[in-house]
Length: 138
Image (tube, rainbow, N blue to C red):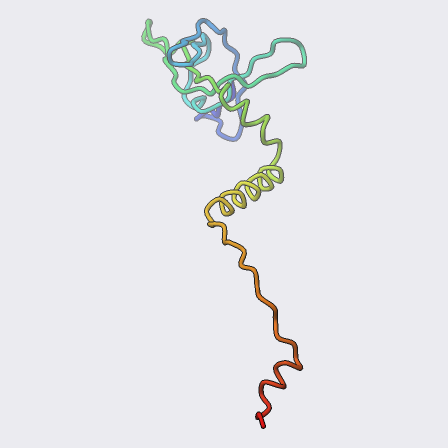
C-alpha cells in the first residue's frame, strides 16, 4: 500500500499488510496491517514472485484497532481493480486511444448519415449545342 502521512506529506509511505480475506460480494480485500490516515485512495500491490508486481486494489477504508484506546495496526479495505485490466490491455497509450476514438467517431458519423441515392445524370449539352441554342433562328 502507498499513502501520504498527514505528519510528513512530502514523503510517500510504503506500508505492508497481510491479506486476510476477500469479500467476493463487495469485490474487495481485507488487509491486516497499518491502518493510518492518508492511505485511502492509494494502490494495493501484490508481489507473486520476486520482481513481479501487480496492482490489485485501491484502499477505500481504514479501520484502526482501538481495543486499548490507542491506534494499533488495524484493518484496511481495498476495492478490487481487476476490471481495469481489460481497459489497460486494450488501450496501450494515449495515441492509440485517440486513433481508436477517431475511428469510432467516424463510424458513428457514417451510421448517422442516411445514404443518398445516386442519380444518373442525362447527357450533358456540349459547348457547340449551347451556342447554337443561343443563336436566333431564321
